[in-house]
Length: 95
Image 1 (cartoon, rainbow, N blue to C red):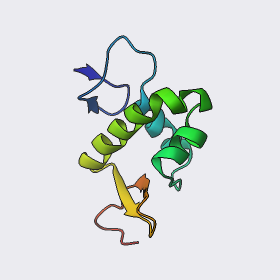
Image 2: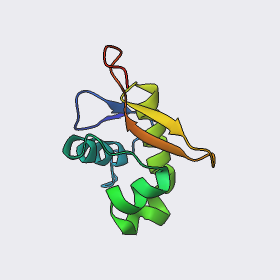
Image 3: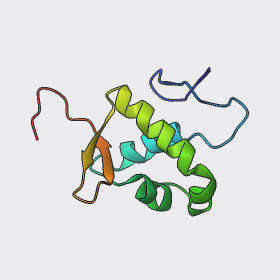
Image 4: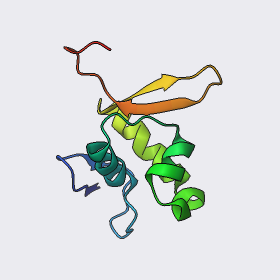
């Protein structure tokens, strides 16, 4: 397992030799845009480099799943079945 650059989060599926770290890039984007929310495709298209979309969607989904499991992100399911991902609401701050 490789440690990411952020707050002690560890990516269970991280590959130490790859330069694309979607978990770290998602967290960096959310630090700059804390009110952002989007689907996995939107995150791949808009939050991260467009060239990574085709090869990175699976890795992005894995990172998003891990961040949800860690309680960093939460999902909102739309009527069409797509999930949006956003920073999790702290228990003391209801939406």
